[in-house]
Image (cartoon, rainbow, N blue to C red; front, top):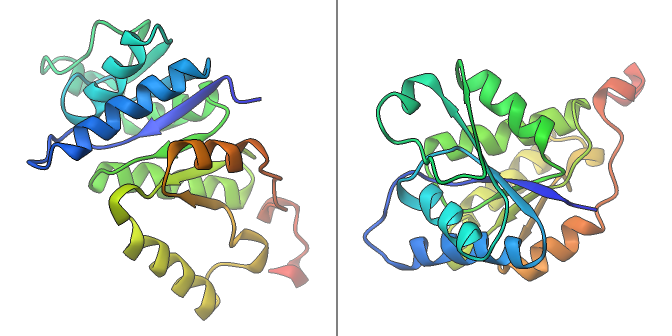
Length: 194
């Protein structure tokens, strides 16, 4: 059962209002299902919208923010809990420790860093939680194609080609994530399998 999900998303507010609306809907949708949100702890952009959506729907919101960002006044003090950590590595470890899975919605470089680390850690065996990608508005079409390209070339082993669970709607994504069966991680493979 997924009690809490880490939500990875941008701290920017794109001109297209669909993105902020999506973020608010994701936060509210998780809260309405009784799923807590673990996120980057900011009050700006999609991050702030996810938190607001969840809080407005009565959900739990746990923010994890690095000291450097907390001191620049972007921390969201409305969170159920707000943890200040020393840096990005500790932040991502805390996301993993507190969550039963990961959902990535649109974002930029930081969001990609978080997504790929969740995938990499799943491949290796640092966690066995589902890694979801909400491909709203086709935002991640090229990333999904690139992931398939890496697999077709041989850089993603067959056992790990389904780590990323991509869907266009939150409902479909959560349904697939709930039925996720962990794969065999690299740490448990024989040298001949590598």
